[in-house]
Structure formats: structure tokens, C-alpha cells
Image (tube, rainbow, N blue to C red; front, side, top):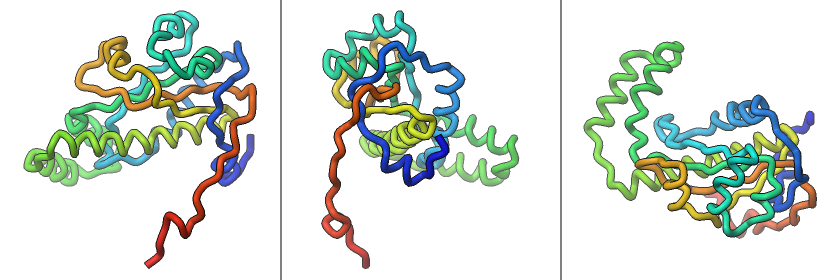
Length: 203
């Protein structure tokens, strides 16, 4: 699309109706995710996972998870359900080993970081707050990445989260949000934001 970042940022809308029958190639989906997964996360632990509902069969199988927001679900090219891992610190060694092998982290730094995790205790509520914060970062990255490839999106909180965990047979994970993807069939509403000085103060 050759848009500037500012155009991508300002042109993004929450789209609730997509052109039906548009098939998005898996390679494009992977490209969108590859870019979006550059989103930051606490200690780079990337506490997220994604279930992508794309095929007609999958759309039928998981339709019951979306008793609301039906138009987005039925017309989207694919849906993504974003989960967070309740015990995401267990990913640390694999991630840091990967960085050591790639030369982006020293062995000493890896060992220091892993030892720090062993000596730190966090309340479950704080762990989940961190995971949800990181989920918001990667969700926004996904929507902006999709826009850069010419696709439209809508973040969705209204779906059956607990049932989603059961449907995908995930353990120790929570469903956070869903995102619909496709090519818009109607323009999203242009919304206004509060002025800068109503929400921010410079000290």
C-alpha cells in the first residue's frame, strides 16, 4: 500500500462488516504476525498465543463462541483469539537460549536473568496484569500490521472466553480478546479522541 506509518495509524478503523468470500493466504497471515510479534513484552517473555479461525469448517466449529458480534464473525476472512499464558515465565529459558544462539544475548546475561526469576516471587494477580498488558501491546501491533498489508480489523471483547479455553483445550491460559480480519465492506465510524491536555500533563 506504500502508506506512511502515520497514514496507517490514522486510517485504522474498527470494521464490523467485511467483503464476504475473501480468502487471505496463509503466507500473508504469517507475514502480518511476523511483523506484529515484534511487540514488546516484559522481559521478552511473550506471554501470548493465538488461535486463528479461518477455514469454513473452523468457522462452523467455533461459531458458538461468538453469540454476539455475528456480522464480524460471519463476514471476516479470519478470526484470531488471543490467549495469555498464566505461567509465562516458563518460556524464559527457551527464549533466552534462542537469543544466545543468535548472538543477541550473552550466556552471562541469560544466566543472570534466569537466576533473578528464581529468586523473585509475584502474586498471581500481578502475573496476570503483566500478561494482559503485554496482550494489549501485541493486539495493537497486529491491527496496525494488518492495516499495513491492506486489511481491516476489529478488536472484540464480547465473546465466550471461558468456553474458548475449553473449545481449544488450552490449559493454564486465559482468552483475552478476539480480533476480526478482512477487507472492509463498509466504512468504520470515525471517532474522536479527548484533547491532549485533557488526558496528559507535561512536567
